[in-house]
Length: 432
Image 1 (cartoon, rainbow, N blue to C red):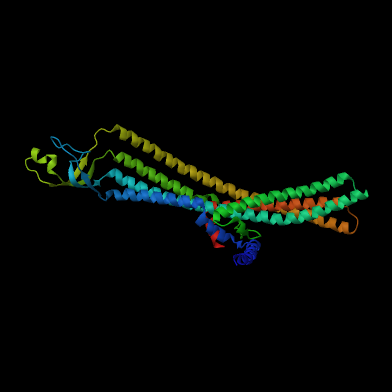
Image 2: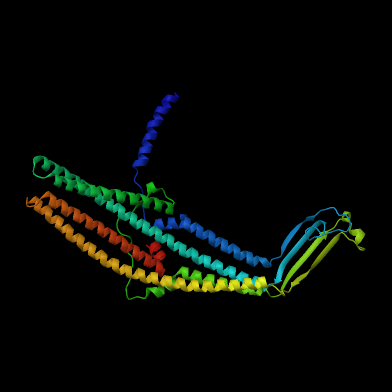
């Protein structure tokens, strides 16, 4: 009975497995890929954790003004005069509360922590843009290799047919073995391009899968170009726009503000400080308090303020001078970030212009090569051309097609980089 049931289940399971394998992968739109990457990318998680840590540090600085209350006991045997245990009198139960009342340094450290938190938020925004750029470029390059594979598979079929035709002509004595080797070389070049395209596509699909949290086997990108990318005029001052929109510059500015507050706090640590303190203790008679104190009582409490006035503290002065140097360094880093962003924006703007021209040249070269190939096909049909001429024309047209694809992708890469520099990348990626 069990054997009969298994014999029916095995074919059903086989059919389901075959159906799962044969089921086509669902097309993943670019916008959806970006949304998934922003939710699943490791870099986004790291940036979020950094921001949370900065916020926790800011909360720690704020909560320093809330009294810290601890309770416990200092149980111990006393022989002779009741000495202290770790700075406190031996007691059955004690309660201690303390907090700063007037602390100029702590106030500056709190402002520094807030500025660092704001800087981490801007860093998260910059990392978010980096994830979007990585996802868009990975998606676009994967689409390029997928389209190239389709074209190369057709080329491989044509190259194989040409090789077989030339081999037959060699047997008939019409062509020489050299001609056969040339046709084999053309077919081998196509296979090399196929291996390159397949390897690149596999790596990019795996990378996109890690970005989006999807299975690589289920990812199928849309064919065709990316959604329309805005044109960049070479006359526009995009460097100034990039400086205003750059989260990296804004983050560096906030970090410089934080370092300035921190340096000011180190200097104010040399000023007087006033702390609130309170303590309650329940004392025991076996610690000999009643033998050494005239008016002993078990319940005792103290409340008041602790005033500290620094007089000589050369170590703190040196520490404050080091903080001044850190603040100066942070201000210099702001200017360095501003210069870098400005130069990168200008470079991206000019690269867009260069690849636009290169894309036009590559497209015209492909049209010329394709026209030559079509003309050679006409000559073959009219018996006025040779297979070798047709094969050379086909190879030339295919190489020009690959050059068009490469130029088109490099133009897309430059435009995406320019969009990120000007702060328009996320709006474009999620708005389409």
